[in-house]
Length: 378
Image (cartoon, rainbow, N blue to C red; front, top):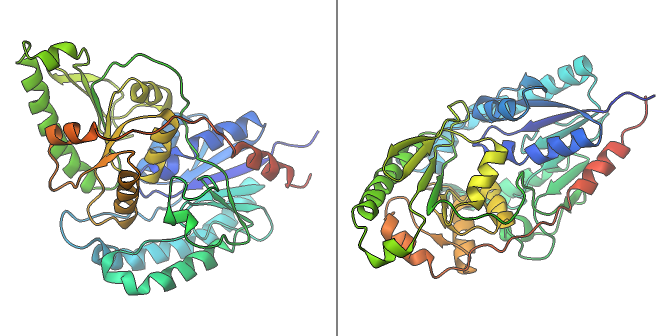
């Protein structure tokens, strides 16, 4: 009998989205009989440890990108570039050591550029074949994308979590240029599943992303949510409020290392640090409207679940700003800036949008079957 295939799954630690979209991949690999090892750092690793406490977790030093409270994101990233490049260069040495020590058969890397080796199958997962550069580096965008494609070409395969039919969910991020020879669309990738449930929450705030912007948005939204809930609770004779049975708001802080206990912090407002996949899946389905960053993993999740959303892009983050504008122009979701956010106005404006249409297409699973089949018996 041949031994179990050992697959190393290594998501980028930039926010939580790269880690959360690897959750269904890990589950499916396990169902196919593979042994999975996880490698990451920071909150992304905390998330995966909570979801998979039984798996071997190996610390892989992360990029540890941080945003500033104010100023240009491009300049902030430029200042961190030497640190990021040093981590990328160290990845290859780290990987060679782990492959030898753990007898790894294949690698799935979510946006970690040097996590490849020539003697085993290595797959790169990304939706950004076209990187939108921050404004100070617009003139370098063409060069940045050439480098991006050159790095992707080092892998045996590039899996794009979107649909092949243009413009898909990601628009020009995946569909602007011809695909690299090793790239294939695998459909949207989400840890969630759709089912019919009764609505429970008027509103759900779902936070994520690097600090300090996550905390800044939390402070802004929490104040407005409390004020909004207080006004609703103090006006029981208002016909619109009386007709709306959904009077609770769920506020998910997006801190994987925190508590999963749901606390009522004021009348009508429930707060929790973090919810595991099943609980979060249910909570999103039970919510009438979601307020969140338009990170691409969140976009895929809400698309699969058919949610209505209000998006607040991270200031100066070109990918999120593009996705928010793209989905707004398609009439799907309302978008507003962080600096001008007004909850009551956003809820009013959101009514004009259609929301996502639920889908349950799971094309990516066959690619995992093919990956395992490509590993020779030993």
